[in-house]
Image 1 (cartoon, one colour):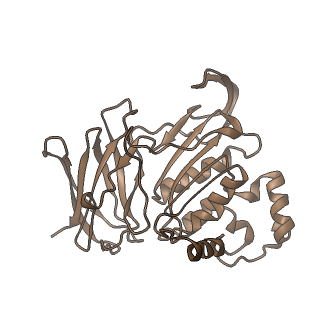
Image 2 (spheres, rainbow, N blue to C red):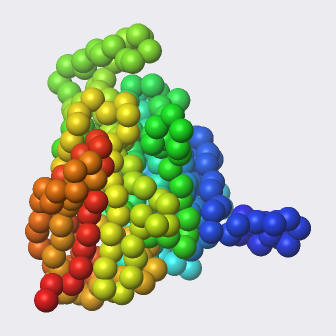
Length: 311
């Protein structure tokens, strides 16, 4: 795949900062287990109904072993202790917290008999815990459960570039309850958005999402990424039923903004509509050099968030 991309760039004018890849089913498995590793090559990736841990799912494990040998051989991989570990993307995310990943839009079905729900839930939780740029959707649409659409409104679409910073959103107040993948004593039935009725055998919301309505402005003049300041404008898309939410925000893929482990910062949140400061706070970078602003207010009309080192 990477060699093909290099070749294409020799034949046609290609903006290497704006390469995207998407896939469904086995293609989404490639999104999760291959493309997610290459945040240096892909600006954004999108997959639905993919598997993120081949080592725990029947015929997927058999397919993997056909290529690599039995997993109980503990065969080492080039970028992981074992082949099994390499194909467990929840583990890979936790083992590589500072590796920048593409923005990921993904979707998985709780009732997907081919892929399975527990491994997808583990993957989604790892995306949150390691503060990756992502939007995730789950539901009862089986092997056709879609990823999250990313339009801002009817006129503009979200833009992704390798040479531009972007936010990682976590713990949004609009997020659903993903549950624990514990099986219910008695399955429940739910009506899907398309009117069909489907059975749910797991705890948590039948359908939900992470970061489905959160967007940000990507015009260069609205993005500040300098050694002493990081600033962006956040908003909610037009379909959002709420006029505001709170969310934790972590700058990722920073080009110039400098963060050292233990560094102390202060931030402000200003209403775009009336230019009034609606919130302020402090933050401290973790041991990986990631700084997170907690419970930032995002207004549907727009919130301008500025992060600078504390004096």
